[in-house]
Length: 69
Image 1 (cartoon, rainbow, N blue to C red):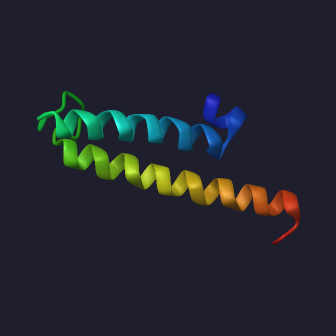
Image 2 (cartoon, helix red, strand yellow):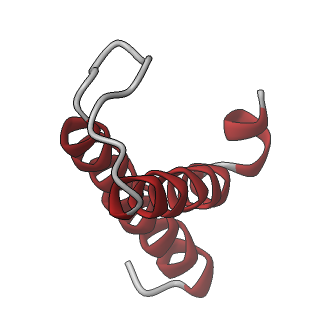
Protein backbone atom coordinates (compact mmCIF):
# COMPACT_ATOMS: atom_id res chain seq x y z
CA UNK A 1 0.00 0.00 0.00
CA UNK A 2 2.80 2.43 0.84
CA UNK A 3 4.52 1.62 -2.44
CA UNK A 4 1.33 2.40 -4.31
CA UNK A 5 0.75 5.69 -2.47
CA UNK A 6 4.32 7.00 -2.39
CA UNK A 7 5.65 5.22 -5.48
CA UNK A 8 9.37 4.71 -5.99
CA UNK A 9 10.26 6.88 -3.01
CA UNK A 10 8.89 4.22 -0.64
CA UNK A 11 10.87 1.52 -2.44
CA UNK A 12 14.06 3.58 -2.15
CA UNK A 13 13.55 4.31 1.55
CA UNK A 14 12.71 0.73 2.57
CA UNK A 15 15.46 -0.81 0.44
CA UNK A 16 18.03 1.66 1.80
CA UNK A 17 17.03 0.97 5.40
CA UNK A 18 17.17 -2.78 4.83
CA UNK A 19 20.47 -2.57 2.98
CA UNK A 20 22.02 -0.48 5.74
CA UNK A 21 20.76 -2.87 8.40
CA UNK A 22 21.97 -6.01 6.65
CA UNK A 23 25.28 -4.32 5.80
CA UNK A 24 25.86 -3.50 9.46
CA UNK A 25 24.87 -7.02 10.52
CA UNK A 26 27.16 -8.55 7.90
CA UNK A 27 30.09 -6.48 9.15
CA UNK A 28 29.29 -7.67 12.68
CA UNK A 29 29.59 -11.29 11.56
CA UNK A 30 26.10 -12.37 10.47
CA UNK A 31 26.42 -14.77 7.54
CA UNK A 32 23.03 -16.48 7.58
CA UNK A 33 19.61 -14.91 7.67
CA UNK A 34 16.23 -16.32 8.66
CA UNK A 35 14.62 -15.02 5.48
CA UNK A 36 14.01 -17.11 2.36
CA UNK A 37 17.33 -16.19 0.71
CA UNK A 38 19.37 -17.37 3.76
CA UNK A 39 22.77 -15.93 2.77
CA UNK A 40 23.22 -12.27 3.70
CA UNK A 41 25.13 -11.61 0.48
CA UNK A 42 22.04 -12.63 -1.50
CA UNK A 43 19.86 -10.44 0.68
CA UNK A 44 22.19 -7.49 0.10
CA UNK A 45 22.15 -8.13 -3.66
CA UNK A 46 18.33 -8.36 -3.62
CA UNK A 47 17.99 -5.11 -1.66
CA UNK A 48 20.60 -3.42 -3.85
CA UNK A 49 18.62 -4.39 -6.94
CA UNK A 50 15.45 -2.93 -5.45
CA UNK A 51 17.34 0.20 -4.41
CA UNK A 52 18.65 0.68 -7.95
CA UNK A 53 15.20 0.05 -9.46
CA UNK A 54 13.61 2.48 -7.03
CA UNK A 55 16.18 5.16 -7.82
CA UNK A 56 15.59 4.67 -11.53
CA UNK A 57 11.83 4.90 -11.00
CA UNK A 58 12.22 8.01 -8.87
CA UNK A 59 14.41 9.66 -11.50
CA UNK A 60 11.92 8.71 -14.22
CA UNK A 61 9.00 10.10 -12.22
CA UNK A 62 10.77 13.39 -11.40
CA UNK A 63 11.92 13.81 -15.00
CA UNK A 64 8.30 13.38 -16.16
CA UNK A 65 7.14 16.01 -13.66
CA UNK A 66 9.77 18.43 -14.93
CA UNK A 67 8.93 17.69 -18.55
CA UNK A 68 12.32 16.27 -19.49
CA UNK A 69 10.88 13.24 -21.28
